Length: 231
Image 1 (cartoon, rainbow, N blue to C red):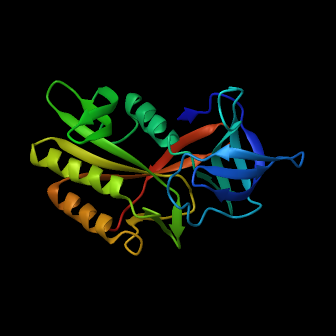
Image 2 (cartoon, helix red, strand yellow):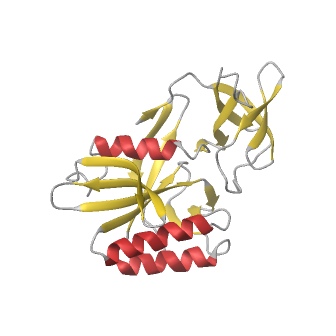
């Protein structure tokens, strides 16, 4: 479980622009600009008038007074803030809540490895495992798809995990599926063919896949279950 450090502010989505900015309408009618940490397209999530949740900030040095956390699409909140899944997974690993990883009792975040800085290093006295975490928001039908835009950075992370497997370490991709209206995970072949191909190579090399559904609400987010995947 990850809990937001401050109460969130409700609003309505107006529009997204300049990649990192989005306009929101507050209940009093004011239009405010929120910082958007998500660098993807947010395909299937940008619905004008949809409810949103925002973290307020009082720091005068910030250019925006809010950070966009989630948007409600149909009956589910969709997690937009890409920093939240890392905190969620870090907490879950500390609490030994992810099956198959409970015996790895030392958890470190943001560890440099090769050309990359990977999200998590898990270890005990006998074993090391590297994890990369991705936030998944895109839905088509019953499928949660990643990525929602071509990702050279994601490709580099897969290559790094493959290299680690070839060195004898465990390595895994954690896809935090930040919505509850899907049944399985798959790569978005029609958006990034290279990523899909590299993910298949990673699986063949022994990289493990953890598609974890996460339920968001006004107080925080929690992992609900592991989903099947089709690669």
